[in-house]
Image (cartoon, rainbow, N blue to C red):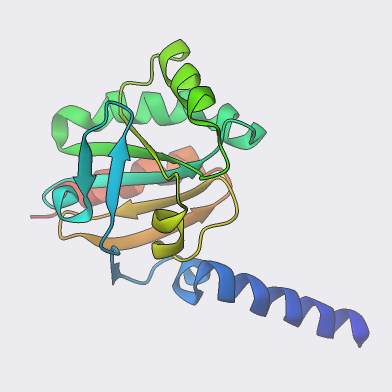
Length: 167
């Protein structure tokens, strides 16, 4: 009985930190208003995501799963970008900016990389604390899927295909 209560407590804690819709995985909610500061010093807002299917990935250079999934995210971006797909990798506030820049340059990341120096973006997107956490945003600016941990790439590609086909 104690074990069952402990599991419920853990599930509630995860739901509180990630958001209940993230656990359900299929709810649609508006992507939070945020300003992303990119490595080149420019900025992009949530409003700029509209009109494209966008993968927003919260990650860190110290996260082994994040580093391991990057080649899949690069391939996904390269495969779908010409069809209206975009990727935005948001480095967590505890990640030293020099590490992020070095990682992006050495791996030749082809998509936008943002620094969340204050943690405000991660907080706005459901108080993200677990990396990687990936959101799929449809053309209307709604979050349609959340992955905590590395996504199943085949499933991710099916979802992207479906969202790109929508008007």
